[in-house]
Length: 226
Image 1: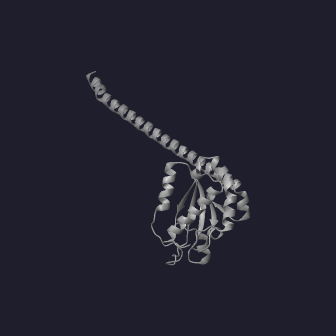
Image 2: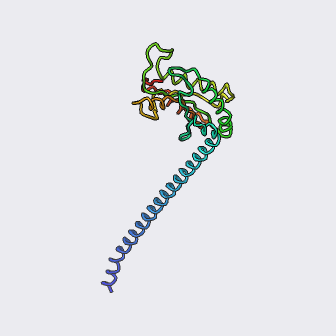
Image 3: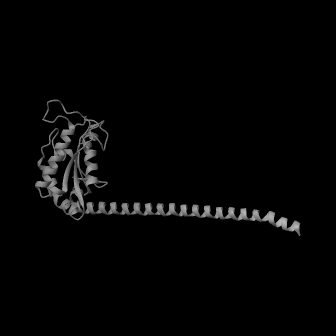
């Protein structure tokens, strides 16, 4: 009897340790499972948000295309990723920020659809001026460089839109000089594409406007050309 009791006393701690070990493993498994489920839920939430953002972007693009159906059909403007593009040659002569009659007529045709589009959303219209990388000839016209030229052209378009009925609180101007080219500057065709004015609806928020303004005024170089 004494030997049996001794055996029981010796084996009891083993089972206790085994039980503690299993409890620890079960707890670790539960923690891992909860973590995996949390990651999956987070990924599902991010995916849903991305799908929703894409849906909203597609709705905005469709609405903008519908609003600008006439000008787009005429081929005088382009629409790419929510940006309305107008060739610089339609609006301005070389080295000039004076609006040509054809350019004013085109801008006038855009005011009503853009005003209706912006009015239905909490958005502003950012008017951006761009140039190619050719330097302005010294002493020609009154522009110091093409940062100044792109800024003046953007301002001219902005003021014209306002004169033709666009609320001044719904539009602002930005200048990019030779930054963000859409084609190579190695040939005349590419440079012509880079000399442009773009208009893009942006959210009506201080953060969005600050970001756009910062991008527009970052002067990492000033060698653009009209």
